[in-house]
Image (tube, rainbow, N blue to C red; front, side, top):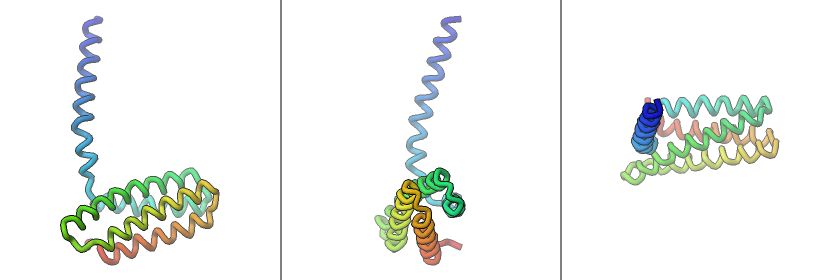
Length: 137
C-alpha cells in the first residue's frame, strides 16, 4: 500500500509539473478577441452599478479586473504598433483606461463614491471613443 501512495504522489507531481510548464505559454498568448471585449464591457457595467450602490468591495474587484484586462489590450496594441499598424490612438486610449481603473480603486479605498462614479463615466467614454475608431463590425 505504501508503494502505491508513493507512486501516486510521483504521478500527481509529474503531471502537475507538466501542466504548469505548458500553461504558462498559453497565458502569455492571450489575445484580444470578442470574448475579452465583452468581458470588459460586462465588468464595466458591473463596476458602474456597484459604485452607484456604494458597494466598495465589489466595485474595487471590478476595477481591478478591468485594470488586468486593459493590460492585455495594451499588450495587443503594443504589438500592433510594433508591427507598423496605425493604432497609436488605441494604445493611448488603453493606457488612459488603465489610469482610470487605477484611480477608481484609489477613490474606492477612500470611500469617495462620487469621484469613483465620475471617473467610471470617463472610463466608459474612453471605451466608446476607442470603439468608434477601432471596433470591428
